[in-house]
Image (cartoon, rainbow over all chains, first blue to last red):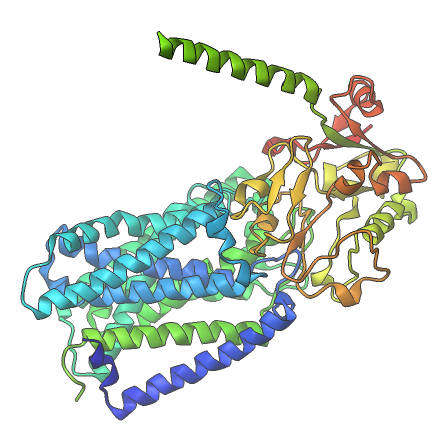
Length: 381
Length: 236
């Protein structure tokens, strides 16, 4: 099966080469970071997590969204998801790979990574997050790969695989809940210290992840012979529609709680998110995210727009990027600003930081492309 | 019969061994710091405590503000303890540092236990185990921790050979001068303060000065509602 990844058109190989070059550039910048330290990024004493952890947080959501294909197919017997379930699982695996890479590049002493296994701290949510993420990676690689295998042999799924698939459903929920717990357990950071953060993470995950899957499936339709069933795309986009609405509802609840509750700490952080602060134009992040969210809401709620491929494509991209902003940098920076002593620090990623991020995304895209090529049974035209 | 005898022997031996150990160990020390807010003259430009600490512990002076490392520094009293109406407190500044909490959120979140709470109350750092994830920095409600974004070596003004310097990529903070406490010496900030505004001692010792002070005067700690139970008190 693996050999399918290495048979492709000129366009395929050019795409892979492009991704490989981007990854290598990212690696070069990372070597510089290993040498000089994290000081080459825009992070600082006050805003000590930035682009890397922002992308990590967002991508855990994309990974968890595989459950929105797996659960309907295996529990509700939505047969039409049969053709896309392996793509969802492989996308989840690549997302986890990127997540783990983002955590790695964020570490100040990466060569001491194994200290987490040698001296585990069971009270640390970060430790548990690494455990569940690694497990989820294995689950999705195995289920994707062996599903292709049994389908090829035209057999039924072996019982161990069925068990694994059933486990993957609560596991998917757990990876994003645990990631939310990293933030929401911190009583010293009022912007994050809300139990609603975990449900919000799940709702935004289920709107951004399947959106990415839709974008990838529609792209494959254009660039390869693969044609995903229209009904599958339709059902998937309905799921995204529901998730966008729930996400918007959660946002409304959050805003009401802060505005009506009138607690200065809560107000200051929300104000920073929407209005920025002295010396900061952070409101650009929230406003672009909100505009994209409204656009995606309109497209996904109006059936004629949702069913047309080109508008669906735009809507899915809008949903994806709106949440990438809101849950990524839009979650991290307002969590740190204002600081515990009321300082309005600023953060802007540096070029090396951005190139390392791009490099990881390129590596993830490369991994996804290879896996998707294996899952695409026919050769491209 | 033989088993019952064995159990009797085993339990009584354990009891015999354990009880004198507790007695010999003595009463548990509980280090704490009390800062006399009225005595502190930070608002007049004094930062003796900061200079003494940073020089003793090889804390570097980083050129860029966002990379700054500070174990102890001076902060306006309103940001530390809330809005004040008292006239002479409008410009008042006080030293702030790691609070060495009894219930430290930083210790809870560290994935490798590179930071841990000692029985005597000091929240310790192991610079060799730290992987530099900075979760502790996110968890600290007081912003007391700093990270070595770059190699500090070129930025240490006068290297103190008696104290280790750190490498890039690890977190550091005030350590209550535990290396001095081990030699029965007071923390360097306490000694450096000419106004004697900083008091340090064992609150479990009924005869300690700090014990007596905290029993007599009003003492506030930072963000008490969070339940971290700091060991640094601001005394009025």
